[in-house]
Length: 243
Image 1 (tube, rainbow, N blue to C red):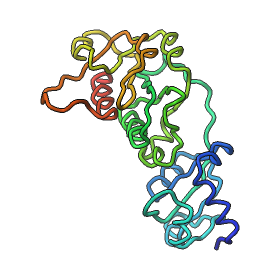
Image 2 (cartoon, rainbow, N blue to C red):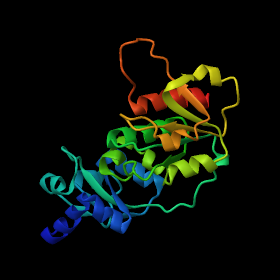
Image 3 (cartoon, rainbow, N blue to C red):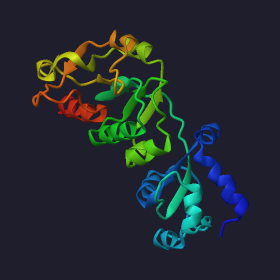
Image 4 (cartoon, one colour):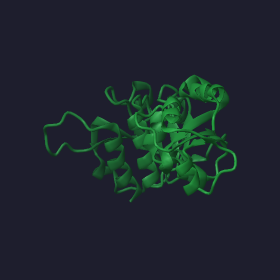
């Protein structure tokens, strides 16, 4: 069982600021809890229903909660069985030249897009994601849920993006409506390169665009839609660049 005071304390982790201060993040639901356990990350607190605990090895140290108590902890509309507080991993910067493709994100704001970008990168084996400081936090609860476990398998760094791009020493493919069809660039080796995706409404900033060596366009075959969702565009381009 969980006391009222402990429930109130843990409910404060609904605030991103509290999580940032303690370098933790919240994981919710059986699927994400299973991903966290499989990844072997340090799990600080587990709050779960008795049914979830019975199905998952009977944790010795956990707080049994009711559905109503789970709702007090959760950022989700319909919390499901388990809530975890997980410690963030501190990694050394990843050597970019060892990666077949690095994903760079410039001012991505929507948590759903960010999580989907991480999930898509995970699908294509892209393990290194470099973000501008004003890109939404990868530990935002909505990002974590939308990543579908990719948060545990991708390395996300927040850097001075224009400076990083200018010094990375790799070809930079930038998604741009003013670019050329990607097929024109696929005659060369695209290994050890960067794919840059810009803000959902404004695209790539001029400062980041200055380091783009290959502006690429996804042809608008239908001729009616104004643009593609950032995560959809990234998926199409990652598929082409990792083939």
